[in-house]
Image (cartoon, rainbow, N blue to C red):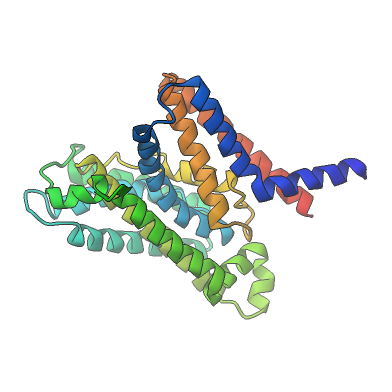
Length: 319
C-alpha cells in the first residue's frame, strides 16, 4: 500500500511539474556541457525550430485528446510547401495567397482523414498512414522531386523576420496557442473532445455527436499542419516536398512527454508546450555536441518509447 501511495505521489508530481523540471535540468546540463547553448543566437534558433513542432503539436494534441492520432501532418507540410510556392514563385506576392491555399489543403486532408475514421470506421493508424504516404508521393510528383525557389522577400520575411526581438513565427504560435487553449477550455466543442476521448460511449449517450467532433479534430489538425507548412517554407525560402518529414512524430512525442494521454481525454496546452520544448532542446543540444545524426535517431526513438511507457504507467495508476 505504501509503495502504491509513493508511486501515485510521484506520478502526481510529474503530472504537475515533472516536464518543467526535466526541461530545466536539460538546460542546466547543456549550459555546462557546451559553450554556446545559453547564447542569444542559439536560444532564438531553438525557439524558431520549436515553433513549427508546436504548431503541428496543437493539432496533434486535439486529436490525441479526442482519442485518436494523426500521422499525416508531415506530409501535409510537404504538399502545402509545394502548392503554396507554385502559386507565387517569381512574383512579389506575400503570404496571403499561400495561406489561403494552405488552409484549403489542410481542410481537405483533415476532412478525408476525419471522414474515413469517424464515418467509415477505419482505424486511425491505417487511414492517416495511407494519407501520409499518398500526400508525400503527390508532393514529390507535382514538384518532380525538385525544390521551388524564386520567392519574394515579403513571403520569406514571415518565416525569418521579427517584430522587435520577437520572431514572427513565435507571434503566430502564440496566437494559435491562445485559440487552441480557448477552444479546449471554454467551448462546448472542447468539452465534447475531452468527453469522447475519455469515454466515447458515455459521451454519445449524453448527446454528443462523436462523429462530428472527431471530424473537427482532424480538420483542426490538418489546418495547423498546413499553417506550419507555409511558415516553415517561408523560413527555408523554398518549396520542398520533403519538408516536414518526422514532424508528426516529434509533435506526438512532445505531446505525450507533456502529459497528453494516448488513451484520450487528458492533456493541456501547458504540458504539450513543455514537452515540445524538451524535444527541441534535446535536438539542439545533440547538434551542439556534434552527436552523429544516426545516434540522434537512436535517441529520438528511445525518448519516444520512454514517453509511451510514462503514458502507460499514468493510465494504469489512474484505474
